[in-house]
Length: 192
Image 1 (cartoon, one colour):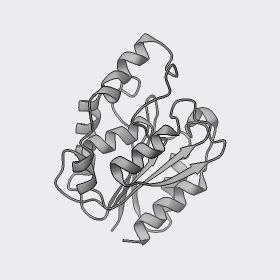
Image 2 (cartoon, one colour):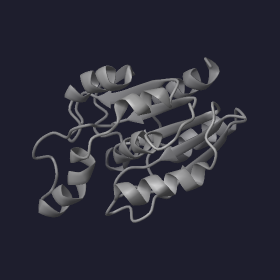
Image 3 (cartoon, rainbow, N blue to C red):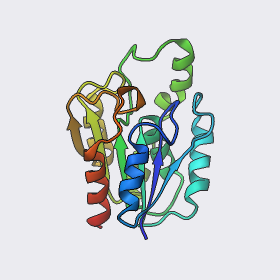
Image 4 (spheres, helix red, strand yellow):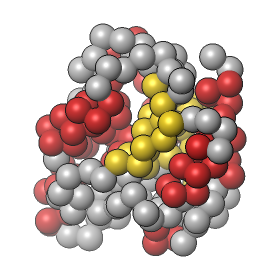
């Protein structure tokens, strides 16, 4: 049975944005879905988030799919560095390797983001441990620039979807449904 884990972003929680909708849509198709409540959401740390994700997943396999939003995508990529199993796929929503300069709100946010931006990701190991990566971006994201498109292609061989006018695709934009996210997860699961 396919298992989908949804990992929210910085300051996020399971009931926000499109997470409940995606969970419900996938569950109607018989897919097991968990929207994780990540620890200390306001001050995300790599070690804490990756360890928590690993505990929640347990034994990953080819029927494991990970959907991340923003820093949740970083968490997934860093988790994939730590395993030696190929999972079914990753859907990266507003994921990033770099942020738009000046987009963070000040020194505290910059300090929290620094390790996520500065500690390199072992992209070769990540690629070995995932069958498919699809990355969805918005053309007007205030934090994640479209320069990340080429980075995701070059580093992970990702398929890319660019949406118009969806911002950071989080709670602040008020999107309760983003159909393209469901489409891409279903494609990933059905095209094994």
